[in-house]
Length: 611
Image 1: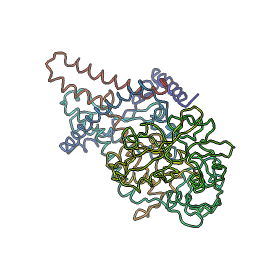
Image 2 (image 1 turned 45 degrees about the horizontal axis):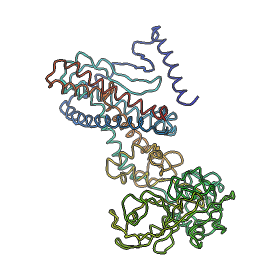
Image 3 (image 1 turned 135 degrees about the horizontal axis):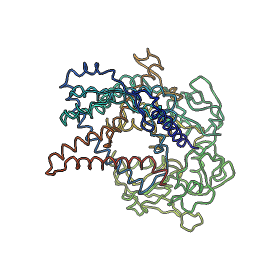
Image 4 (image 1 turned 90 degrees about the vertical axis):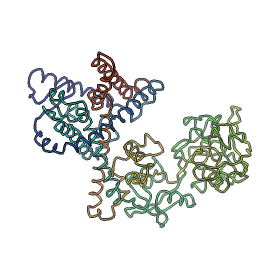
């Protein structure tokens, strides 16, 4: 059985046992069971809430702000959930890590994006979120004069999923509608306050004390690659190449491209030096690349009609037109020296594929290239600009940067001949360059793919970890403003799924990635471990509080959003010239709640059932 089936089996077993104990009267009065849900009740803590409720005007003012924010988020959640559910039904996506049911649970080890290495930090963040959320409900109960019957925690089987404050029903009915709404919105408001405090500390002094360690951070290596054969692996940092310091991953790539040595000395951060025998490992192949193997798909354009052979990820390119190559520079030189832009690549397993080598581009729907006659939407291979050889996307970018908007250039591009035999034909396009809106530079009107005709190679065979990018997010320097930063921070644990160009998720400064950072400044007295622990606690506390606050704004009972929806609907219906106001209120809230339930179920199980 798969993981989800084991989880469901465990829930059913727990439910059967708990219901049997309840029906036999073996459970204490403080423990109540309803299916797989268990609640534990207590009356302790009410005196503390009475003392904290003293400044009533202050708490009401804060809660009123929370009510406004909750109403806006509720409306947004309704639209978002319904739109996503409709999209899934209309065009079911393939199941991914994000939309599998077990990954909805905030349980390290069960949720594949929440590793056990940060289980303690996640538990602390969850406890803070639950205590603050329900504590705020209790506080506003006392501010509004509502009696509290009990407080406690809610469990899904044995897993804490929430806390609660149980107000007295009679005293709740005696409070005006505004007081009840403030009480319902208090938990969400408190969670957002915690988010603001946690991220302010994280983005400020804590992340400010962390810097990226020098060198190229190794996120991983390809199996059988030169780096893997040399013993280089995840968590290593390459700090020198041929005895010269390496600043970062970009510096390493540039040095490898300009170094023709087939064997290079690589020094790691632990002081060890290893000799690496370079080979051109294929690290990515665009689906529309004319060199792509059939398993990669052709996708149309320049890839249509490609020969049956082709290159795939993890292949090793060994020759161009019979000339042996082992380095990035050697590959470029061999392609540039070829008499014809159409070249033959040979791989280590003896396969060969012939296709045009240049910059693989997609023609924009509107732009100078399309206006010059290039078919909009087609994938072409640009091999020269004004007779200047273009080997890859970098060459094309350099050629355009050297020209001015309005200048007319001749662009040579290849596409399939359409003869079904893998042939290619070329066309010269006279293009008047446009002006790029962002920087004012020359604009061709294309979407370019990295590599040689969409094939990227690496003579070490390692993947870099984006340590500087993650630190820039956690310090608030990236993300396009506060809202953009919060959105990116929200998806950091599964960023590689949201943005496949980022190969690694971020679960905090833990495991091998902690070797990519170092602590500086006054906080260095706490040591790397102390500062990293503080950063992890702040990150997960803010992240979990944000998730809990947003989820509770879903307008469905028994969530806070559903309760706020009811009081807001009562306020509107009370002003309508109708007699059956309670029935109308009930119809609206039940309809919205059922819509939300169906939408959530479709989002959770739709990709598995419908795809």
